[in-house]
Each structure stands twice: as structure tokens, then as C-alpha cells.
Image (cartoon, rainbow, N blue to C red):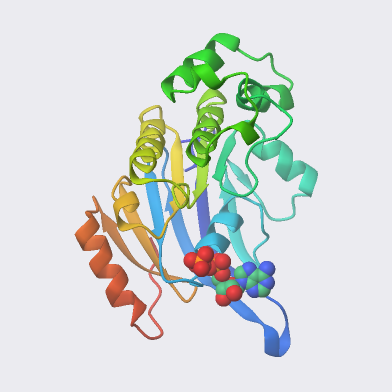
Length: 253
Ligand SMILES: Nc1ncnc2c1ncn2[C@@H]1O[C@H](COP(=O)(O)OP(=O)(O)OP(=O)(O)O)[C@@H](O)[C@H]1O
């Protein structure tokens, strides 16, 4: 729970339509879901089913066409870009492949960035502890461009750990990684929940999804199924079945 006692992320009947008229695409068609504190949720579904749109709307990176999103205790509707940035600062972490780390800063500076942005003193001991936990102590003085993809993902996770983000959004965090590094990154995401942090991850990979407490399946912008305590076989079976399915009934999760 957040300090206000609400779940850290909640979506109620969220719709998102891109474009207008004949070109309109309904990416989310009425999604209602709660992400409770200290849980790890994987979001899966066929290509184009709305997974990234769901993540972006939940994180306040994209604005729903209709519906309500609550993030770390605040309703996002009507907030300005500046208010959204301030809300996310230090309280929400991102492990995205595209916009992740600041290239001009060292690994240590990137990990300490949320504190700097929030006007707090950087706790150097905490930063060093976290870098050790993700196995990057020897790279603390390097810049992101000098690291591998997996190491960069680990820096992003270290940043979420150091800043004690209440919610961490991860978009295909293991897409570009070999299976050993992927397992390490997923294990680290799983560890975040031990301290009560909430993780929401989009993935195509049934093995990655097994690190989550539950898997939500999206089809045509609707949440259609949920699997708790997932195994790779069960998840792969659901995906195969959903890929061939027509207009589904939405469920509230
Ligand atoms: N900026 C945009 N403008 C127009 N349409 C968009 C935009 N972003 C997404 N869409 C459309 O919305 C739908 C959902 O896209 P989204 O990226 O959320 O799907 P996804 O499930 O994450 O797909 P993938 O697994 O292929 O990454 C798709 O039909 C996509 O083409």
C-alpha cells in the first residue's frame, strides 16, 4: 500500500484510442485492474493487443482517452506534465530499453539520479550497496555507452532499488539479453517486491512471466484472463489459445 492506503497502481475502465475517424485504433477498450503493493505482475498478449499502451497509461507516460488511473496515491487525470514528472520522481522506476539512462552520467551518478532530482542528498553508501547487489561495483565509474545491454538493464534496476521506487514499470526488460543475464535481471525485479515495491512488466516470454506472481492477458485492448503462480507451460498454452481467439469478453481483475 502507499502512504495513503491505496494500491500503488489502479486503472478503472481505461480506454485509449489513437487517431481519429477511419484511422482510429482502439488500443485499450475498457481496462480495469489493480496492482497491489509488493506484487509482481506480467502483462502478456499478442502483438498489438495494447500491452505497451497499458503500461504507458498506468505510468502516466500516455494519457487515456477515458477512464481513471491512480498512481502512488494520485489520480492522474488533469495533471500537467510537470505535475506528472514530480509525482513520478523518486517514486516510480522505469526499466525500459529505449529511454533509460543518461549517457553523460556515470553508472553511480545514474543510480543516484532520483535523489538528485528530488532535491535529496544522495546516500552514497546505499548506492554502493545497490551496485554491489546487481554486480556492477567494478563499473560504477563507467558511462552507459561502455556497458552491455544486460549491464544497462541492471543499472536501471539499481536505480529503482536505490530510490526505493514504490512502483517499477518494466517494458520487455529481457528482450535483448542472453538467457543467463535475463534470469539475473528477472531475479532482481522479483527481489524488489520483497521490500514491498510493486513491479509491472510487459513481456512476450513465458519463461520471464514465470518470475511474476500473476500474468494478465490482453487481447484487442481488453484484459481477458489471469493466471496466478504461473508456469512457462501454462503461460505458453494460454498465449497459443488467445492468439487464435476472436473478440473476447473483458474481465475486471
Ligand atoms: N502512437 C500511436 N499511434 C497510433 N496507433 C498506435 C500508437 N501506439 C500504438 N498504436 C496502436 O495501438 C495498438 C496497441 O499497441 P501497443 O504498442 O500497446 O501493443 P503491444 O501489445 O505492446 O504490441 P507489441 O507486442 O507488438 O509491442 C496497436 O494496434 C498499435 O498499432
